[in-house]
Length: 261
Image (cartoon, rainbow, N blue to C red):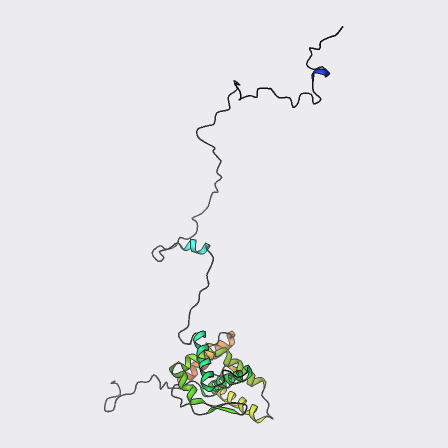
């Protein structure tokens, strides 16, 4: 006699997994199911916003009267480089072009670099020894080995920019003067003469402690220590008080009083 198993938990009526993955033949919400999907709030999804509380009055605001743009935003953007030119000296690009023009005029632009370097050293040391006065007649020569170059045509090329030209090369001129100091040899007449010229100018300017700064344009150097800068200021003050600037002096006309122009 056969028996029918009505108990759903009998071993023969259940699957191996115990009914864990058994599904209703009519899933809820589909095919006429009476189960309704949950309603969505008409307000949408609301997320919680975390606010940070600030203290104090905050940073000093930008004076809107002075700036017509957002300086704070400009400070957060990628920074760009900036620069200016100084009125008392030539721009580095202009000075380089003028020096190359001098090389072309004297005919050494195609010579080896050591020849051009020696010419520049002679030109810079000449500035230390003779200065950059616009009233200077330009007598003398520059020499490189056995070759000589007239100084007057070079001064004519520099013209009214002579002072500004040498001020652009102030640090390079100081380096040439240092080389004259280092290579001084009392047993070599040429080296001893160059050192003597340098020390003469340095002592006249009260710069015997810093002979490499004896040139007219030394105050335009950008690689100076505080002591060197102070010595230059004292030297410049003493030189200006004892010298007359004939370039800027206004001469009175013949027959006029001293106070008339």
